[in-house]
Length: 308
Image (cartoon, rainbow, N blue to C red; front, side, top):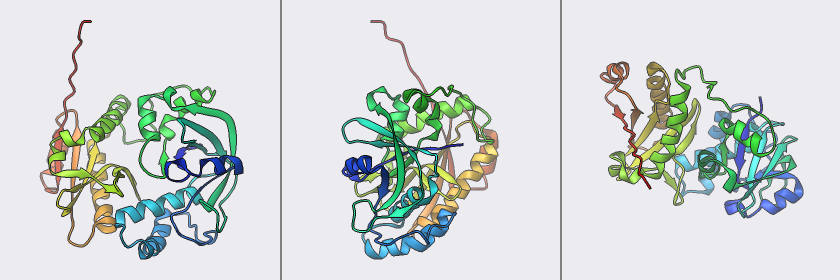
C-alpha cells in the first residue's frame, strides 16, 4: 500500500523550484550532519536522540516544536517509502506530484540538504480543484502532512481511477459515515476554535505564530487537537469520537495523554483530555466517572434552508 504526503520545500515553498529541477524533496531544520547511519525504523528512537540536539541549538523552542521538527525530518528521510506519492506546493497555487524513487542522501551546504530522490509526474494539481477537506489537509501547518485518506480524490485529480469509498481501514471504527462527518467537524472546530467553550480557556498549540496542534503526531497515532491553557499551565488533548468504539476512543485519549505528559509537557504542566461525540454515550460516561482528567462533550449540528 502506498501512502500520500504533502511536503513543503522550504518555508512558503521558497526552495520548490530547485527541488523540482533537481528531482528531489528535502528538509533542513538546521541539523548539519549526514543522517545515513542515524535513521532507525522507529521514529521514537530518532526523536529521543535528536530532540536534545535540536533544542541545544534552538533554546527558544519548546519540546512540542522540537518533536515536530525531528518527526518531520525522520518522515522525509526514512518514513516516506519508495513508491509513496508526494504533493509539493509550488508557491503559486498548484501542487507538483511526484513518486519517491530512492533512499535518503545528504547534500551538505545546499538548501534543504536532507533529501530523497523523486520522479516528478507530468501532473500538477490546481488547489482550486481540490475539495475543501483536501485543501485543509494540504494547507495544514508543518513541513509534512499525511493525506493518504484522500487517495481516491488525489488519484482522480492526477488521472487515476481509484474508486471513492467510505470504508475505514481502522478496525476500531464502527461507523465510517460518522468518521467522515467528524473529520470535517474537526476542521470546522479548528477554524472556529475561539468561538467554542474550549476556546475560552485554551488555545490550539502554536509554534512561531503558526497553529501546529491539529493532527499532532504521537507514537500511537495522530491526536486530533493539542491545545494549551492560556496561562500555559496545562496541555489539553482533544479527540473526536469519529465513529470509533467507546472503549477504543477512551483508551486512545489516555495513551495520547500519557505521551503528552511524558514527552511534551514542560516541568509543572498538567495534562487533561476531552472527548467530543454527537450522541450521549453511557459507556464513555461510565469510564470517565473514574477518570477525572478527561471530560466529555456533545456537539450539535444545525442548518436551515433559505428560499432565494
